[in-house]
Amino acid sequence: MAYVWKNWAGNETARPLSFGSPHTEADVVSLVQSAHDAGHKVKVVGSGHSFTPAAVSDGHMLSIGALKGIRSIDREAKTVVVGAGTTLNELNFLLHAEGLALANLGDIAYQTVAGAISTSTHGTGVSLPGLAAQVVGMRLVDGVGNVVVASAHENAHILDVARVSVGALGVITECTIKVVDAFRLHAHEMPMKLDDVLNNVDDLKSSNDHFEFFWIPHTRWALTKRNNRTTDALQPLPKVKGWIEKTFMENYAFGALCRIGRVKPSLIPRLATALPSSGSRTYINDSYKIFASPRLVRFYEMEHSLPAECVADALRDIRSMVERKKYMLNFPVEVRFTASDDVPLSTSYGRHSAYIAVHVYKGMEFEPFFRDVEDILRGYQARPHWGKVHHRDAAELATLYPRFSDFLSVRDELDPDRTFANRYTDRVFG
Ligand SMILES: Cc1cc2nc3c(=O)[nH]c(=O)nc-3n(C[C@H](O)[C@H](O)[C@H](O)COP(=O)(O)OP(=O)(O)OC[C@H]3O[C@@H](n4cnc5c(N)ncnc54)[C@H](O)[C@@H]3O)c2cc1C
Image (cartoon, rainbow, N blue to C red):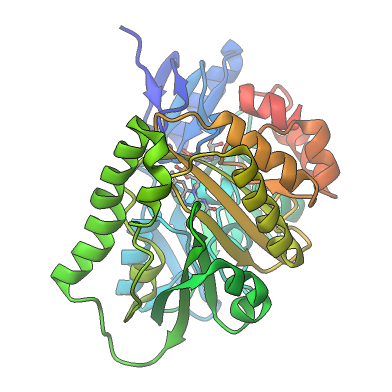
């Protein structure tokens, strides 16, 4: 029987001709060359955590999980060379052992380095851009099987756009990434009235190194998270309390509420009041242990970046629409912030950004709600996350990214025969 691949959320499926696991860059070269010569398509899959069909292929799918680990460290330049198949979890541990860390991370660390940068994965923090902006060099295998080395000194125009490429330029085998000295964060989580958050959002986001909040639909509450650098001693959540609050409450108990809501959606507003929105907590831990946490409850997600100054208006519009249309939502709406960056297809390209992410529990209908949210956010020039559900096409995306055509030119140069095309790249890049 043919191999069937599914992404993490289970909303995307592929039946590839083959699924390869090359062990070396040379293996990747011969795989791409023979696929190209046969007129077949190739797609690398990282950890399969994209909600879009970014990684699917009915040609050859491959995982470069074997190309992992730190290959070298330049302590003066504060950069590390890593195998592109390294997961962020693995990288966090390896860096920590060297007294180093990534400056910022998203909510999870299951992604591979290449997968995360390729879709413009980001965390939160007004002075920090997403992961792709930390990439200062890479090696990739292009669409005919050539190895391309890209850095500020060699093929700089390729590095420029290849930092966010949705897998459309080549198979990235190695990345050079900027790192920082290992650091600790003081985490402070507390519920606030959503209106208070929105009225003070500028101050909240700029007075904390990393600020984010989760609005709980059907309530007036938001759970806020402030993470700030500290040199104070470690003060982690006690093991049992930490497991109960992080793993049990945010995953098992939350998952149980979601299952009840899926069976009887009319109960969702009442169940929402039981979400972990009460109580505050503070703790101090190594940065990577605070940024990312386990996500055991599966869901579908859409996320857009918009000019940071529009976030309160956009969220109020979404709240009114949810009330008007009586959507029953059992997942919080997450809001984060990043600095502007210079990566042409980064969702934060050229503007300080706020991100609004909406989620729907796995197995529940998400299309009408996501489309309504997307329509609202269109009015704010919002750009969709490349790895999360959206409905935009190349014509619309070209209006949102001033350097879209620069990306397309490099694509013509590196993948003239579209070896790395799939139905997603056909839609978003044409
Ligand atoms: C539970 C959950 C939480 C998430 N949290 C966040 C978050 O906090 N912030 C955020 O921004 N995003 C978040 N995401 C989205 C996620 O970071 C992205 O979708 C990311 O791309 C997934 O990485 P991956 O390794 O699974 O890549 P995949 O989804 O497997 O692939 C993504 C793209 O990268 C390409 N690719 C992978 N490897 C290579 C390679 N070696 N060379 C070239 N192209 C390659 C693929 O072909 C595909 O186009 C989350 C997703 C989930 C499911």
